Length: 370
Image (cartoon, rainbow, N blue to C red; front, side):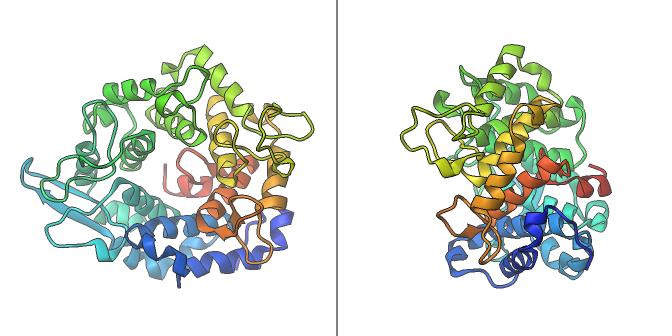
């Protein structure tokens, strides 16, 4: 089987990484039982991780396309008389006359099929109009999005949260469906209201987050959303510079070559080179991706601003599990599929082989014309 050589430090554990990922595509660990309705997330994390390792992932899983496609379903919303469609997280979630598709599972499904290079699905099976209708129905009047609809009448859920994560997911789905210009997006969502909501999440000293506290994950979602909308110019120069400074301050150091966290009583010198998601927090594998993705959106020369080599060493030496394969949140936890995916993503982003905005390899985006 043809293999991509990601990094020599990964080569030594390549077989273990593959087994760890394939295990999540066959027999799920018992700790994931509660994830049944969101099982597609696990599939996505595993497939994308394998695509980083294998050049022929689309060929290897060709026989599984039918199973992935079976999670795509549609509904007729009587009130608006519009058809909507999307993906459910598990086949057990398909219940007659109950709207059970969600924005996250829809994006996971679309990106999984993109990574598997399933052109037939996108050309002959996917109903882009009903898919985009679903996204539009999830938007609230303030411009934000919920992740699912009321299961009876198809109105935006009154009990779901609405934040920058779902804004990103909604726009990413529309982008995959073919929206490129503001006019394209405005056909299904109110772009002006969305931009106002994103603006409302800006924090005083840079970054995006709720209640005035910047968060690396929300920051990446906001910047990726603006990138897909081609609206990065809506950010002021001062805010961009403050955000870059805030992101750089998230890289931890024991040597002083980054912005030292001297006042952080929880600082762990083993976090050297890693990134934290908020101030006064430990480093975490996933935040290496979120922070680096934000930096590469804001600056083409982003690698000159941070120490990417230290980040690679942190991920490979501290959070790579050499016993079971995969990556963990930190050097104290066991490997899990989420941090494994974002660990691979961060490494590939540094190498220049990953599309951080869509969270899949550049090979997949190029092959599928995204």
